[in-house]
Length: 147
Image (tube, rainbow, N blue to C red; front, side, top):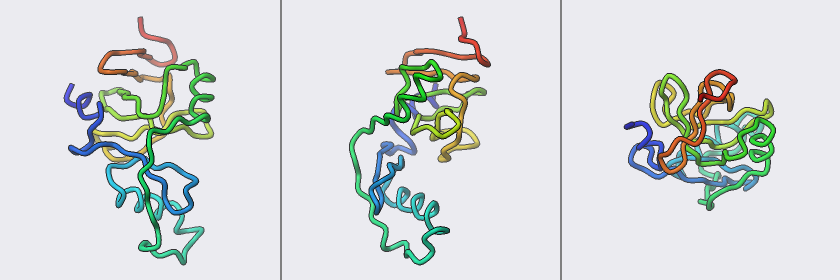
């Protein structure tokens, strides 16, 4: 339950926020603008090696509603899923949905467990429980919905 409380809006006693960095084309979920800048820099420094870290700017943006995530959610038969939604991945690690990927899976930012602070690719119907306002919306065990 402690993980659910943390995932319900807090991460390390800080809010989970969205930021856009430098080219403003990608939203990054993070707890601070500095962490968002570091994530962005790590992703672009190979293809853009001359950019100094100090040249990257991060601005906070409001709630995001990704059309891409919505398409993935409908395709995977989880139309209720949205960015910022709390999920629990078995064996009990909590996180928030922060996007989707080309494999039609969801990206989850973990708030506890061994993957805390990492965004990882998760199958949206395999050993996952979805929460809205602390209530279970849906739970899946393998590929079948739990009774």
